[in-house]
Length: 162
Length: 106
Image (cartoon, rainbow over all chains, first blue to last red):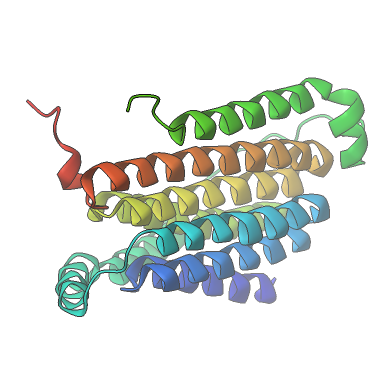
């Protein structure tokens, strides 16, 4: 239980670092670390397959996408970076206090949640649920992936006009 | 539902809400398009963690894992297309500032 709280605090600290750092590249790397921490939490919550997906796809692929995009866009000059840093500090200086205050307020407010436990689980294996009980999800995933691929192709299609 | 499960859910709920708040704040406070996408990503991660936490306390881990896998696929596709749009905007306006793409405003 205590270990969970330490991991959750690390997750919030990394997320704050992600949004407050002045370098975009550093923000993308911190986002990857946040994602890795979330995958540890998922593993601790008895969801190993989802944790592996989070670790490989969100920590790996999405970070590569972000870093490639930052690499493709030209970095700004030093004066611009300094100007942006001052502007960002002005905007984000209250964020840690807001987040900590919000967390303390939520912790102090004793919310009575009357959650009802649903029926007992029929299937305990995620692979069986994925492939046998919810096969439409797989078809949906394939359609979404194809939509993404065609979307990117259309976005980067060379114009025929000379 | 046992008191221990409820306590765990409350603890996770508070931190998940904080993570979502950071993502929303990042989206609202910045004009940089890549940084706004990072905010969206943080918000999506909060939702993913909430689904997993609910699956843990209700003991429906298998179902929520299947949902999370689908959710992660959707997340990656949305991010890829959004990054493609950002790169297109960059090539047209030579800027990543959201204020430079207000051509249709008014």
